[in-house]
Image (cartoon, rainbow, N blue to C red; front, side, top):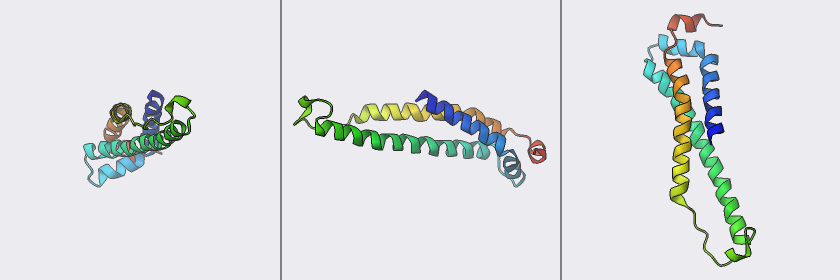
Length: 122
């Protein structure tokens, strides 16, 4: 969880550096600083939510297959498969919050790029 959040922070930092001219153009045409920062946060949030859902889907289906086929233990035969929704929700919320925390600083840096420097950047 921590490594994926850190990786998302690195990707967000690289996006700010690589999109410096685009950020400058957005600011020139009238976008406010908070809108530029929110665009980076929304992008990272979408990636984080996609990663969480793409991890939960196969993970839960594999757990169901192992549980119902007796791959975990023979003692699970006849027991109902129960999904720990609260625990999964807590872990997912922590993962999302950590991802947003790691992308906050790059998003803030993107919003503070001086317009003239961004347009001059090559």
